[in-house]
Length: 112
Length: 452
Image (cartoon, rainbow over all chains, first blue to last red; front, side, top):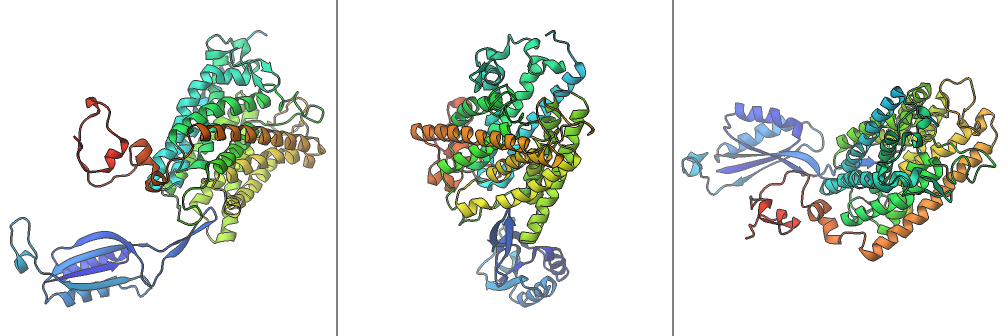
C-alpha cells in the first residue's frame, strides 16, 4: 500500500477531486496547509510597512492506494493540478505498513 | 435667562449622542482588526473599558469639571454639577438652542469616551489592563476635562483666552479637544511604555481587515452625530457640517489610496479605511467653518499627509502601534491649522458657522490672524496634554508598572490578562461552573488538564 500526498494550489482542488473520483479513488483527506517552494512567497504592504509573506496557503490531499494504483493516481493529480505557473506544488508517494478500517476492524488492502 | 425647550433641536442632539456613542464600539473593531489575532480582545476591551469608566466619571465630576464655573481659565468647578442631578436647564451648555442640560451632558459624555479610547491604539498588545484603567480614569479627569473646558467651556483656549487679542479660535467639533489631544497623548504613552517585542523585525500584520472596514464604516456613521450634532441644533449649519463631513472624508479616502498606489503599487482596503478616518479627523474642527471647496481641500490634504505620516514611526523608531499619531495627531493638526487658510465665516455661503470674533482664513481674504490663532491654540494643547500625559504615565509606571511581561506579550495578552481567546481552539474539557468559587487562574483555560 502507498500513501500519495499532494500539495497543490487551493483553486485546483475541485478539479483534482473530481478527476480522482473519476479514476476510481474512493476516499481522500483534504487539509489546509501553508508553505513555499521555489515560489518564495510575495510582498504585502500595510500602511507603508512592507512584509514578505513566504508561507502561501495551499491544499494538501492525502490518498491511500494499492501499490499498483499509486503511479496512476500521481499522474491524475499532476495532470489536473497543473497550471504551468510557479507554485503549482508537489506530489509524493511513501510506503504504508498497515491500514485499519475503524468501523469493521479490517486490516491491510481490504481496509482501503 | 428663561429656558425655552426646542423639541426639534433636542431630538437631534439625543440622536447625535447615540450616534457618537456608537463610534467607540466602532473604534474597537477598527483597532481590533489591525492587531494580531492573539490580542484582539484586549484591544477591543480597552475601548469598552473607556465606555464603562469614562461614562461613570463623566456623570460624577467630568461634565462639571469641563462646563462648570471657570476656575483660573483651566478647569470648571468639578463639584458644581457633581452627579448632574441638580443642574437646571437654564445652566445647560446648549440653553441658547433650547436643549436641556442633561441632553448636553449626554452629548459631551460621548466625546470624552472616544477621546480616551483613541489613545489605546498607540499601546496595542502590551499594556496591563489594570494600568489602562487607572490611566483612563486619571487622564480623562486631569487632561481631557481641562482641555474641553479651556476650548469649549470659556477657558484659556476659547474666545476670551490667550488669543483674544488676535482672533477667536475655531474648533467646531473637537480637532483640538479630541484629536490633537488624543494624538499627542498616544505618542507620549507609546514612548514611555516602549516598543512591542519584535517591532520592526517580526511581521505584525492586521489579522482581520473586514473588521477594520466595519469599524471605519461605524466611525463614519457616528461621526455625522459628532460633527453635525456639534451645531447643538437641527438647522442649516448642521447640514453644512454634515455635507462637509461627507465631502472631506470621501476625498481623503481617494487621496490616501492615490498616495499608496503611487508609493507602493496598490490601493488597499486598510488604506481606504485609514483615509476615511484621516478625513473625518481633519474636517472635525472645520466642519461648519469652511465651504465645500475648503472641506475638499482639507480632506484631500489630510489623506496625503496622514498616508505619509504613518511611516514616520519606522523612521524615528517609536511604536505608535496603530498610528494614533499618524492619523489623529497629524489629521487633527491638519484640520486645525488649515482653518487658518480656508475659514469662511462670512455671509453668502450656505450654512457656515460664525463665531463672534473669528475671522476668514488667509485664502478667503482674512489675513494671518486666524492662522496664527489656530497655530497658537494647537501648540498650547500639544504642550498641556503632552506634559500632563507624561507625568501621569510615569507615575503609573513607577507605582504599578505599565507593561505586561515579555512572556505574556509573546504568547498573547488575551489569554493571560482576560482568560479568553478570540477564536476557536481545539481540545480542552469542561471542568466546573463558576458557582463552585473563583476559578484558579485565567491561564487554566490554556491547558487541557483537569485541576482538582
